Length: 266
Image 1 (tube, one colour):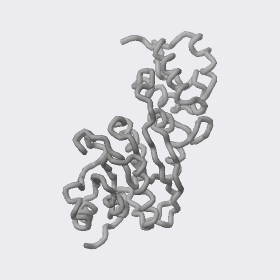
Image 2: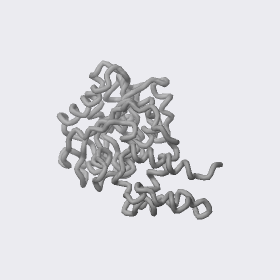
Image 3: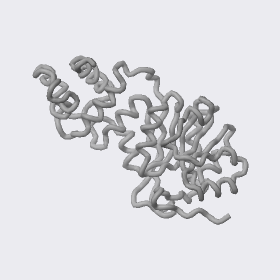
Image 4: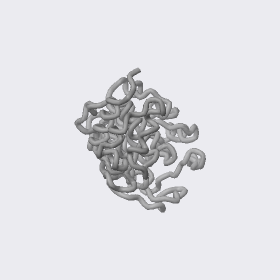
């Protein structure tokens, strides 16, 4: 069967280096004995190494041409190739409610959306690995105080330990992307509850970073609206003189609880 044409509208850049593909496949070994769901297998350069592992493997692929190629090339996976849009899937249905590892050479233009969806299903996904744009990987792995530290850093690090594993150059793809890539691994930490209202935590983090160069006493005001603005004492707290990139996850949890105290009750 002829090879699949990379499609620009799907952000497809097919990995051609088999050694790197094998290394990416091996990142799932950190979470043994549970199934693997691969996102965007394309022509199966990563899939061929995943299926060698002693565990169930499924792959979700939105490109019909790739689905046909995978079905022809990997007949053992014929019933395991899901021709769907990952972002619209109910992940509880993939392995009958069982936990699984998420992996893949992720489409760069939707990688952040993929990881936000992972957070929605964090109890199902104890481990997520794969390759993404290096800039996004640096953002996810960044520590407080760095320019790369932002919404993704805080939201993911609240629930996962992040490892930046290695960098991948542009020349090992067809077509080559204009940026470098990186392989990361995210493993669920021991946190079962943040100790705050988790939906408010998301709002606080996102609102703070919407004006990341401003002090919190300025950037948090949109949370309240003009009619429910806290008094001056709330904004006079020491933490309000800091910028969002200076706060750890624990400090964002503390900040969320402080905001909750002055939020109008529904």
